[in-house]
Length: 512
Image (cartoon, rainbow, N blue to C red):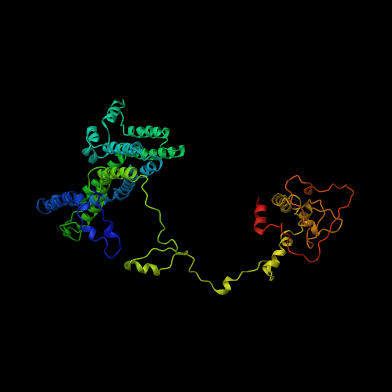
């Protein structure tokens, strides 16, 4: 049975784990005390033989052997090998728990999709959940010794009510040499299809949802089977076990206390009990015992999974959900905070202090800045207000230069503006070109062929153009010898035309 100590460590305090050290059930002491006593007994036997049995010549030879073992025992990578192994085993152990075939999600889908208050509707729902529970029992009795002891044969499964005698005949008549835990899942699919044909499942979407949830349940059963079939590679387990045992076999000799009179290095003290060697054995051998217990959590150790409890719980809860709780709703009524503008549940006297704590607003909420650091800074040394500076944005953005030809930035921007603002005339767009500053009679270099419009005068309202082939967007034909009429910009500019994009929009268009 699983050892639960969560409530004992609900609050971190000084020496919070000290009470856990006195627990015996599920503890490391219960797992390791035999190995620890065996190691200590062998160590003390060698120490007694060195002190009282060996001759002086034999003692000198034994001392050389102790120094040799102590020097080379550190070459065994116990921490490295054992650390990776335990990490792998713990990860595998948790994944096996996540693969436990729990029926909670499936029962919620069954109660929401299989309808009918009559006896047949009830029979459908209960039988579907019984098939799911039967599949879980079959796979758990294949991997768990505790469940197998409870259901050693199929007859026990029939007598327990998970399978009828007719279903047992079909189960045994199915000719397959493999594990048949998946058979009840197929029965589930067939019964769900029959319920769909009868209209108990009202649409294909609900039927699809039911089968998808069943596939999730079946995949968990399959994962348990594969975890039981594919173990951690045996060579890895053997390497770890040999590394730990060989290391402490070398420590039996290499950690012996030698006669201080001989003057050996690091042997100035003579004790009978190797305290730190015992601690090292406790940690390393205990680590190996942890992996030994977790590598198969479906046994009968103290911290193994409660498989029989899970079977009983899932079977009872699933039958309650699909039978007695089907379409069982309490009367709808207004909640306690119906008219409250700010709903907040009350606190008890033990938790009233939580009401005084402010809610979290963000990690930068408490940052303070000086008043002068919060002033906006003008760009390009302009001292005018922001709205006036924005009116001059077009003139500053589009300077007159030799590199602003048809293939330049302006040549790419104008077609983009034309696509985004199809109601803008060609003449109004031409006013934003660099050729606005060209002298009279000069041929513009930006590729604009229409007359320029004075930005200082309001544009006449025109009807929106809906199609890309509207005549308003096509410049009027001009003879090659006909001079180009250019209207110079007035000295005072008015506000920017409304069709001008924002600076951010222009940057995006130039990048495009």
